[in-house]
Image 1 (cartoon, helix red, strand yellow):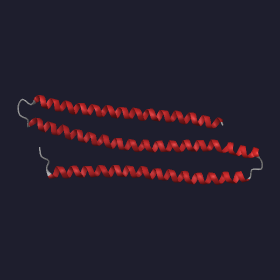
Image 2 (cartoon, rainbow, N blue to C red):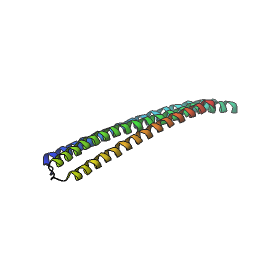
Image 3 (cartoon, rainbow, N blue to C red):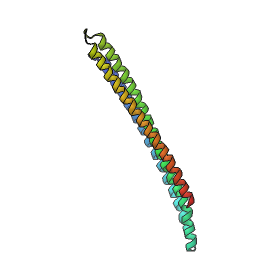
Length: 177
């Protein structure tokens, strides 16, 4: 089967639209990351100035130790919150890319199935075994893809659970100090 210029142009247009969509998703993620980092930088500067002013008011070693102890928990909480925001951003970006990949995979799968159907209508008699083998190979590839997607989703859920557990433990430890 030969592809027509119209089919090639349509495929190129679809690929360009997919690339544009993925690029926009990546840029949105980068924009969110820059916004988060700018917020953290401003907050850190403000916190540093407040802490420096308090440190200048210290009159003895006891006040200095108390001042340092006061600063530890909020700092740990902010570090954990920042880590959480980074993880959420990465998770959101990964989900967006996964959805795009699944959409493209499904479209490709439909095209392959249509091609196989077209080929089977034009095959000579006696080629049923070859057609069945081709269909089985396609089905096997689809199963491998679906299994790998399930494994990735399971790994992401496990990572989310571990992050939540670690965050909870770290926050409890920071509050005890």
